[in-house]
Length: 149
Image (cartoon, rainbow, N blue to C red; front, side):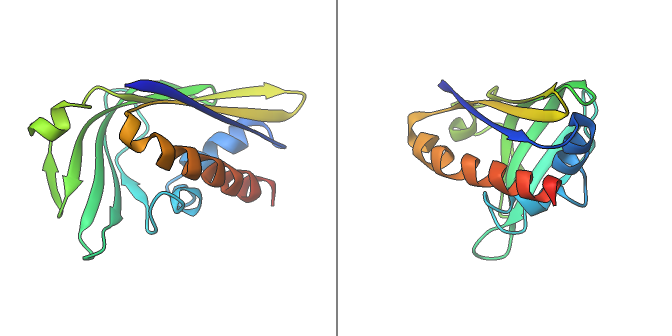
């Protein structure tokens, strides 16, 4: 596994950025870049189990099963990926899942002079690195546009 880093500066206070980035009604607007129809089920609360879902090509829910490891409102959130959802079923124990279970995705919000830098740090394998390099900048640009307009 290797760490990937992405960031963007948004012209808004970090409270507003946090609320739009992680809000139930706005989350899908910027994560649509990863998969159309993206949404989550769960709460941004430490210890909470989250499902990050979107319909796959066949229309069945697919995505990630994660645990919220850390929440410092308006400053930082950290999730640990523990499984996948495929064909509407959770898998947290197959060999394929075990190879990357325990990877993290962390969001940090730093406010400077009324603007917010959103920093994303995530673990990934070589197989998915190029995909994330293409998607994360687009998703963060969408988030910036959503927050600023």
